[in-house]
Length: 108
Image 1 (tube, rainbow, N blue to C red):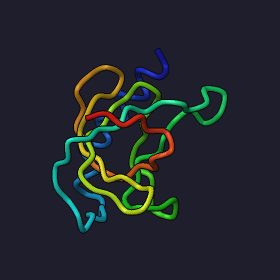
Image 2: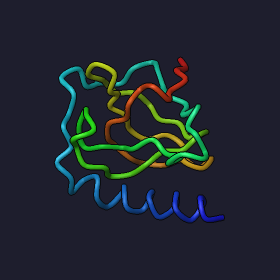
Image 3: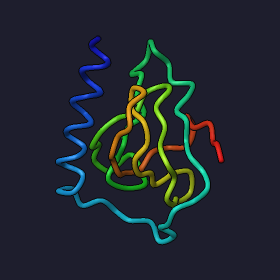
Image 4: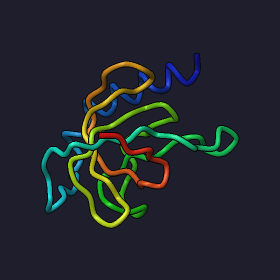
């Protein structure tokens, strides 16, 4: 229940703050045929994959994804992926930002 409420709060925050944030856009921005299914996060660790304003941990966190969440890939830089929209907690969600690819299972 706590994860559900946190995810819903994040989704609402993402919808309102993502447009207000200065998100770095990738040079190769555009739809791809790939997506990321978040997997392998340690539930005993921090348990989330940070959604950031730019391609690196120095950029601000604007949200988070959890195991089982999915995102569409719209570009990248090194091991960082620019993602938009997908599913959070099994529900369609709108978001935009950067994630690190280590916890992605890629799908076409």
